[in-house]
Amino acid sequence: MNNTTYTMTELMIVASAREISDGDLIFAGVGNPTLSALLARMTHAPNALIATESGSIGPSPKRIMLGIGDNAGIENCICSTSLWRLFSDQQRGYIDIGMVGGAQVDRYGNLNSTAIFGDGSYARPVSRLPGSGGANDIASCAQKTIISIPLQRRRFLERVDYITSPGYLSGGDARAKAGLRGGPEAIITDKCIFRFHPETKEIMLTQVHPGVTIEEIQKEISWELKLAEKIEVTEPPTEQEVRMIRQLDPEGIYIGTGMADLTFERYMDMLSRSLESFH
Image 1 (cartoon, rainbow, N blue to C red):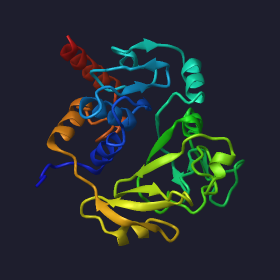
Image 2: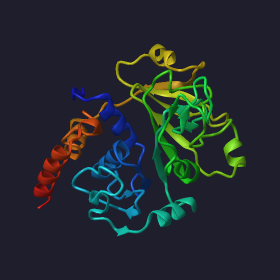
Image 3: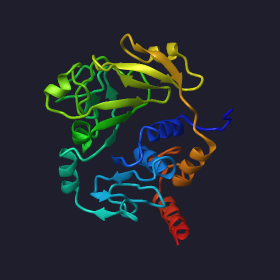
Image 4: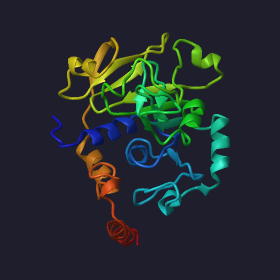
């Protein structure tokens, strides 16, 4: 029996890492997506390669990346090209897995990271979000995408306010008709994992995390959720996986306290200790 103590964030990182196969080329953003990709490389997928938005391919950093311009993003990389070249290659279909997230997701895996309308509109939203960045390109062009998002009713909507990153659009063959390759493979949440019906492309519950019930999950979904014929319980993180995650993020910037608590002094101290361990 696995008695390892872990957080839900660590479980989401591990579950995302398990979606990566050996030899995959992964477009991973800064934060938990990079932690998932690095964890996969350190465990079951040693030949997987990470690509970052800055144009780096195959970095193997000894400390976490704090931004796409961070030197850790090119540490021990195979090559460091440009942002436009990486996105150009991505649009040609060279990326196997894209890892994305958003503020809202709907029943067909469409993501919104642009604006929350509420009673407003695109021009006058309740909340203006960071926008697409490279997320639309990733979701449109990768062979498959892994979505990571907390399970909350305000996030899981029958229809998102704005489609920043396309999933299966209106379902069925709508994505293929739009000329988009791939599509979402899984939605990793802090309570469960969803996958997509092979024909309708609607999300269905396939895995629940330990201690979570189907009833709890349905309460956080704003429509009648489809259930897979067999619903499995997610395998908890191993002691080794948790240890590796905490070694990669020893300050808990992404798995714990968050970037808001990162002061310049704390960052410089962390960087100094990371460089000492590197040498």
